[in-house]
Length: 334
Image 1: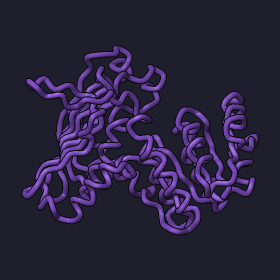
Image 2 (image 1 turned 180 degrees about the vertical axis):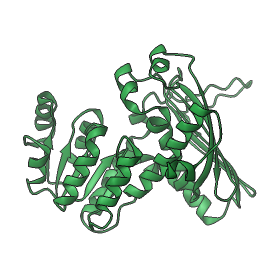
Image 3 (image 1 turned 45 degrees about the horizontal axis):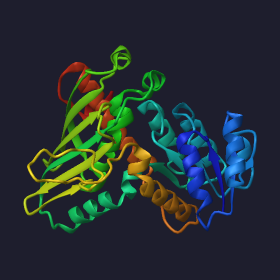
């Protein structure tokens, strides 16, 4: 098949490399505003360069990967759907929930498959955790703990345009909690602080946050996030049921140091980057996308799925600023 790629920044270039190695992908058609990025894709992957997203969609592609800037996502999704081309788009659907809902309404009855890029759904540990919950082997759940800690904050320009830590970072935890447990979030309470980069505080954001999520069956989920984790990139989940407890990410590259006498775990080199921690998951989600393009399966993460995680992020943002519990129903109504 022939796959288009819109955006060749860090993640777009990584997707281009991944797709170029899949046997089912015969050619890539790429577009990016930066000429150097396009030249690199042509030289490294033998991609065909065209001048614009419209040209990519008109080039006979079977599917398109959107890895452009967030503000471009809504327009590019709509353009691809209008062209009848299956879409893989990095999260989020849109910067603002109102615009995301407009995209949902515009594409809902199109018949064109759209897959949003929440890669943790394709990580082997999270897949196994979901299977354990679905099988009932843990019994009814009572507590979930989800953690995402970055080794260092992104630059000030990124923070200013990110929409805040809950929309940019925590949203991965929100999505994976929904996916693993199969439950919906009904209420949140969030706190945050700034103990590091001053520019994060100046942007009205927090660099370290905690959120308590109440799920619709009464399960409590605790989400911990920070832009500062000197030991590395830390993504984990604990799931506690009345019959058993399991953990995702408890392996030798875990960026955490035990001080218990005689304990050598974890013994490996800590993860230091999200693309290190989730290399195989990124590859798996694009492999699945080629199956979506081929019509062998439906999207594993729809626009509607992605918006549910977005509502949780909106509720946490409001809770942080107003120092109170916030229901998901409240932010939907607002």
